[in-house]
Picture (tube, rainbow, N blue to C red):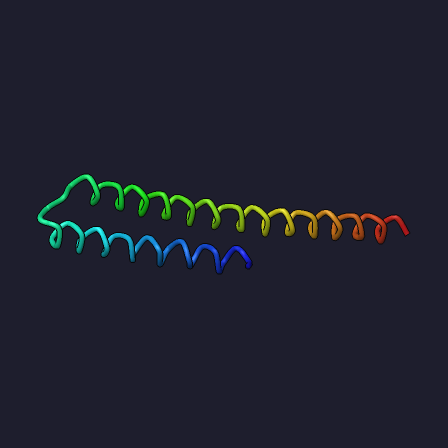
Length: 81
């Protein structure tokens, strides 16, 4: 599973948990403890989504930096000839 798929799964799970917390809140006679627990898990899913996106962006940036280093090295070698 790549980072984009994981981020989408975390995003949709947070939405499902928010809707689930709303249903639990109204269906169980305003049982606040369970609702808050579900909301905390939903926030955790959002944090995981942003963390996964950040790791993906950092990996892509590192690849771009490596490519830039290779290109500058090739340019230096060409200028020396």
